[in-house]
Structures are given as structure tokens and as C-alpha cells.
Amino acid sequence: MLYEINEKALKLESEGKKIIRLNLGDPDMATPPEIVEASYTAMKAGKTKYSSSYGEMRLRQKIAEVHGAKAENVVITPGSKWGIFASMFLMLKNGGNVIIPTPYWTAYDLIAKTLGIKTKLLRTEMENDWKVDPNELESLIDAETKMIILNNPNNPTSKAMDNKTLDGIVEVANKKGIVVLSDEVYGAISFNPTKSILDYGTDTPHIVSNGFSKTFTMTGWRIGYLVANKPFIDNVTKLNQITINNVPVFIQDAALKGLELHAQIAGNIKAKYKQRADLASKKLASAGFKFTQPDAPFYLFPKRDGLDGEKFTLDLLDRGVAVAPGTSFGDYREHFRISLTAPDDQIETALDKICEATN
Image 1: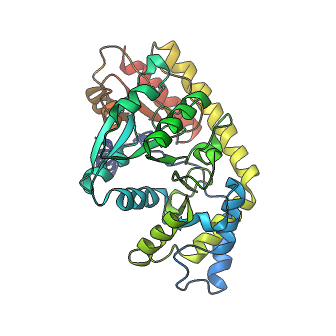
Image 2 (image 1 turned 180 degrees about the vertical axis):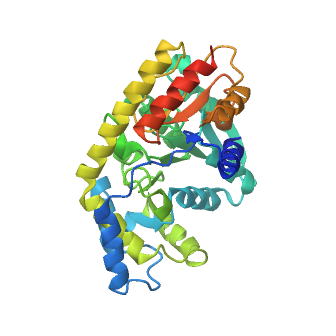
């Protein structure tokens, strides 16, 4: 229902209704001017031709440096979503199933269904701080299981996985010979340090998907990357060669500039979204909503006992606020997701309307 809500919001806006958009994780901040200028400079320099399907070496080297890997472990993709799609396609095109803890980012399940892949959903609960139980995970693994997808920090809960839990998941995956695909797109802007799957080594079968959309407010630029062992990176590159060929070089130059300014840009984003998260937490708590404190931008996933999240979401849209129902992320009817990706004054107005709507 996530995409249906977005389409309805767009329709209402086209009819002249003012909608505060808290339904998508699209940062309201502009792409930093240094990044835009780097892309413009690259275009003027003629960097508009075909290029390597692995990605530009300078960018791959910089990404490798950030992650403690080698350039041969990195491939550039048109957004992190493509990297996830490519990984699932390559790992599961000949059959098998994938385990996904819930709540989850909607695209994982939709990609699996598009590819004809069976999913096994591992439910987690707010009351247990959204922790994955490694023993329960192991019980879901069968002879056909080829992949476990993690989103750390998580969308929609904004919770980061504690080290002990991640250690347990990796131990189970290694014992069973299962690949972990770890979507870490929010990791660099987490409010606290977050452990990466790469901390267990880059010579393992595990895969990191990451990108520039969230950290550098580059959602529309469509550039991401995978970090994995070299044979898998080579296979993704072959898929790139027969599909997208390469991410435009001028966009890769922009991403490289972002990495060069990483500390400054990520610091600004973390500070802004921590301020917003604190405001939202205070207002929602005072209105009686239950939720876990976010460890990263951009989301909160509140709950109210007995709430019909889908009806609440539709009613709220009529009040001029778009949020996403909890059922978009699994079987969480009493929840809804708020994305703190609008200007501060709009967020405050929207939060007031959300709190009023349940009275």
C-alpha cells in the first residue's frame, strides 16, 4: 500500500490540495552544491561517454578505502535498489528461497515476487526492540534457503542491530552456508556507530548494498554500490554489461566528491535528523503512541493498540498529511511509518495533525 498512498497523495496535490509528505524517505535537503558542481565540471570535460561496467576506478578505490576492502570488491550500480535486485537475481535465479526479517523495506518482497522467489518472513516485535532471534532464524532455514536479507539500520523502525544479535546471525549463516545481503544504506548517518557485515571480512560470501541517496541527499541521481568477494562482483559486472552498462561518469564524479566531503555532509545530516527525531519522539510519546527510539534517520514506526493503520493513513491523507501504513512493511496493522523528510515547520504541523487524529 506504500506506493498506492504515494499515488493518491500526488493525485490530491494535482487537484490543488496541500499535502505534507511524510510517506517517503526522500530527504528534503538539497544535494550539496559541491556535488552538483563536480558533476557539472565532469560533463563540461566530456565525461559523457560509455565507461567501465565495474565503475570508475577512483570511485571504487575510495569506496574500498571507506569499507576496508579492495577496489576489486566494489561495483557501482544505478542506485542501491539495483544492487539488491542484481544480487537476488544472481543468487536465486535458479531457484531457492530468501529469509527476510520483518518489518522490512517493501522492495525486498516485491523484487522477490517479481523474480518468482519464495520468501520466508521472520517476524520481530517492537516489544522486543525489533531483535532477530538467531535460533528462530536457524529454524526457518531449509535446503532451499540461499539468502538472508538484513537492513541495518532498519527501514521502517530506524533501529540498528546490536553486535551480539548480528554476531549470532552471521554465525548461523556461516554454519548453514547462507549468504547475507546486508542493506546498509542508513549506516553512515546512524546516530551511533553501527556494525557492518564487512566487519566479518571481505573474503566471505556476504554482500553489502549501499548508496549515496540518503547520506548525500542524492536520491534522484541513482548511484549505489555493492561490496562483496571478487567472483560475485565480476558476475554483477557481467549483468551490468547486458543491462545498464554503466552509471554515467559525471554522476560517479559527483559521488566521489561526496565521499571526499563525507564527514562534513554526514555530520550535518545526522545533526538535523537527530533534532527532528527528538521532536517527533516527544510529540508522539505525549500523545500516547508506542515506538522504539530511532538509532538513525529518517523514520519512526509508531503503534497504538487497536489502531487500523490503513484506515488511519487514509483518513490522515484527507487531513493533508501522507504517512505509510504499517502493513506496507509486514503484518503490522497497528503501526504506521513517519518519514521526517519535510521542512521543519511542515513536520511540526504534520505531527500535531497526527496526534490530533487519534483523539
